[in-house]
Length: 238
Image 1 (spheres, one colour):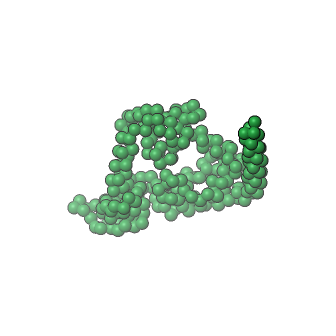
Image 2 (tube, rainbow, N blue to C red):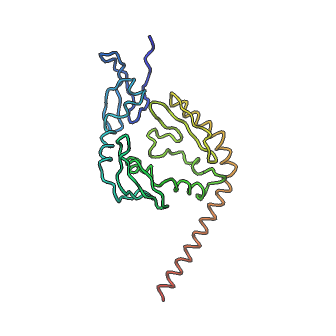
Image 3 (cartoon, rainbow, N blue to C red):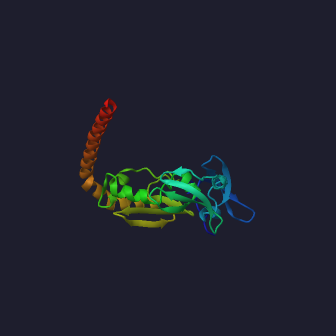
């Protein structure tokens, strides 16, 4: 007989496995889980590992509320919501107009959470214009160890999907790591190894140039601010 899988401490969506509480009448292994919302629920291990259980039920309730909420006319970053659209899977999407002129269908959850704030143009511009972007690689992004707010694991470069853990990293506009693992420890180790291999030497090589450019931009802004202030005073005097 196969040894029961130890899920203690593992995250499945919003659920954290706390302890094994035996089996149900069908022989399925049950786990007591703590949900991020504060509730506790008993779930079959197979539902957790297959991604069929991701919360105590609060996630569905929130999605239902978001999908029912009228977002018409609302602004989310560069996006203005135009109208509600239902796709083939009967899931709600919102047609949005981006400030750059493009249109896209957006998930209401992604709009509300701040995950989607443009058609993609904002990300492209930040990559090419932001200070710290050298040779197509954003040094500031690597220096910032915080995960994106939408990443419930809280681990930069590692996400969870259907009970699996995905480690990813982009370098100079291309993925140098995009791999799925059965456990979170291996995913974290793979991400760290990629950072050490690609990002760390690149940062060390270019950080001096980045700091010089940052100081230069700061100085130009100060000068421009003084010029603008003089213009305001002159205009007020006229």
